Image 1 (tube, one colour):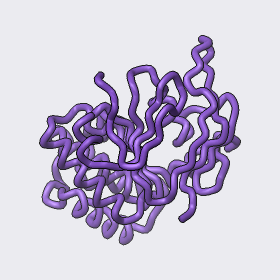
Image 2 (cartoon, rainbow, N blue to C red; image 1 turned 60 degrees about the vertical axis):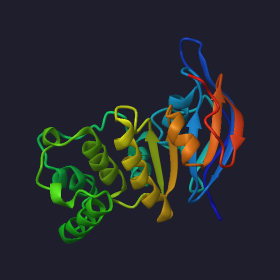
Image 3 (cartoon, rainbow, N blue to C red; image 1 turned 30 degrees about the vertical axis):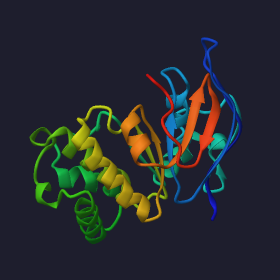
Length: 231
């Protein structure tokens, strides 16, 4: 099985002197599901932002599907992000577009053929259980439904890697479990998932690989690990 993500001696220092990551070495296989856990300020957000090149490392190499993204030129970054799905805590849907249009937009910007757009959008809306809401607008949806639209948008162009940053942070427990069921279906199709979370119950009940970050370092790497923090 090939590596989807590799980090080699990755450091990140911010201009104010804060060292957010301290020599991270890591490999994630294609198709793995990995939780990123740790106390606030541990470096989780920095870690996540490195993978989709919102941030560049101060030192070190980051490979996504064998390409060193740390050395990409800025004009190449949008092409990288076509291969990485990103799901945020706050959904980030376009309020004046319908569910269908929000998801289709991700394919329209890369000039996909209209026939392919329609087929693919309907496929992913079916996957996340929202085909019946395709003409609804974001303000007509519950928080869980909005997050499922966000997930559909993130996977509509079949990225091999999906990054989820606190995807259940604004959701009630029952809705959070529904979102995890969607992630399971996506992971079962072979997509690598990296999920930063503070949700202890999910990590403890849906066992996957757990990376524990503290002080910008990986202090724990467990297959089928538990949450391990009291915060």
